[in-house]
Amino acid sequence: MNPVRKSIRQVILAIVTLYQRTLSPDHGALKVFFPFGLCRFYPSCSEYTKQSIERYGVMKGISFGLMQLSHCHPFYNSKGKSQNAKVQVKSDKVSETTFEF
Image (cartoon, rainbow, N blue to C red; front, top):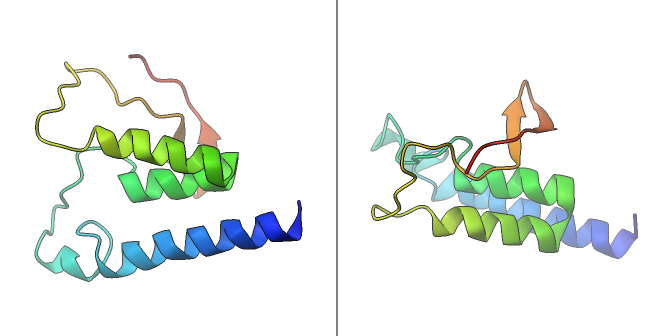
């Protein structure tokens, strides 16, 4: 991998990790106020973005993260179906899974 791309990826991942540790109500210091979390999806939007960037690169990973984030509002109706995700956590490894629409 190109060293410039690798460093850009590391910077973006560091920003997402910083968000998770500070402002995220599911991962960070605000979890005290939300013990059961607020995220309706698993993995959370920030974790999904992080995993997507690690697996697919910065541009594609951010676009997957933004698509996931666009579903994170009270008016989104999944009609009982699974989320549109391509990456899921399984024992600290990134693996590809298939969900229905």
